[in-house]
Image 1: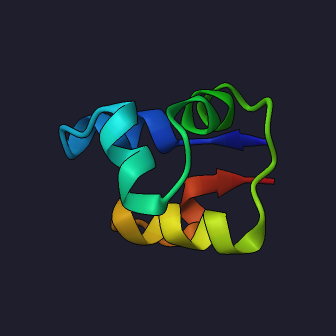
Image 2: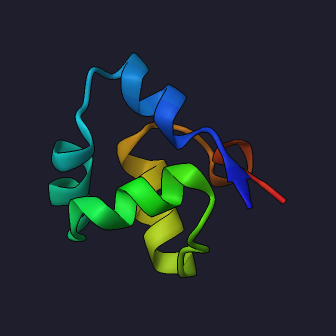
Length: 62
């Protein structure tokens, strides 16, 4: 699944580590999410979208 996590994270000047800490996952999870190699649970997708201040349907491209 494609997403705009990396772009939105950069706009907010957040590192992968900072975003991971805010949503309660490991940095590696964010790496895999950004690369499109991991499909998040609905809860994780919601939490990431909330931290990145972006509607979930805009952040993840199905």
